[in-house]
Image 1 (cartoon, one colour):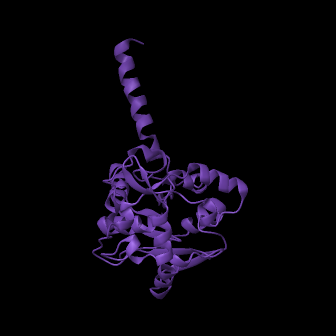
Image 2 (cartoon, rainbow, N blue to C red; image 1 turned 90 degrees about the vertical axis):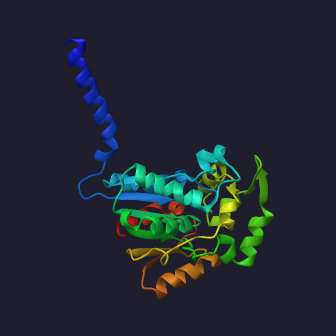
Image 3 (cartoon, rainbow, N blue to C red; image 1 turned 180 degrees about the vertical axis):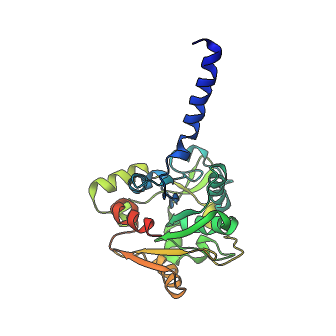
Amino acid sequence: MNRRKLLPVAAATVLATTLQPLEAKAKGGRDFVLVHGAFHGGWCWGPVAEILRSRGNRVFTPTLTGVGERAHLMSPAIDLNTFIRDVTALIESEELNNIVLVGHSFGGYVTSGVVDRMPERIGSVVYLDAPMGSNGVSVFGEAPPDVRKARMDASVEVNGTRAIAPPSSTAFGLSDSKQVAWVDRRMTPMPLKPYETPLILKAQPGGNLPKRFIRCTKPALPNIEASARYAREHDWKYAELPTGHDAMVSLPNEVAEMLLAS
């Protein structure tokens, strides 16, 4: 076969390789976008993502700017809107529609912002032990005083940026020594400005989409209760998991099953 005949074959091979992620979703499978919380990165969803993918779904686990493997991008310019744009840009660039959007912990504020900006791309929303936020109010603005003080007391400077040093993962309800070690060595400082940025919403958190709230109860973090109560009072699908805050690490199978049911 001469070189001219090889070129179309090579081009077809490259195109097939490029399109491979689009073919990875099995018939009946769905697209999941999983948004992590403070100090974490997309890495924390690894066990859950593996289970979801094994069921024929596509899973995207973006890491927010300035943390995780993107810690080198830490900057004073990062605020809550940066994080929201991180996720909307992923959805746009991957041309995703009818997705299951999941937010954990601080990621609940990001999730609410994403839904508010592009509800037409979202099929359903899941808040995993995550505050959903309120229009015009920052994370610090609605945080209990003790939580706000703990975050401020842990503030450090990272490359000229005000940030919060990560606590031990035992603060997130983890007790298994291997899980604690895995999370502790991967957490990175969290930029402080996103905590101070008001969340701007045109509609109620989660909009008019189907919504599920998953509450972690052993131990239950007090600062999540207001959002859990809101979900119950507004007839969201509501469920509880007998584990700590980082349920995607401690109970990945159970979390995956709940997400599949969303």
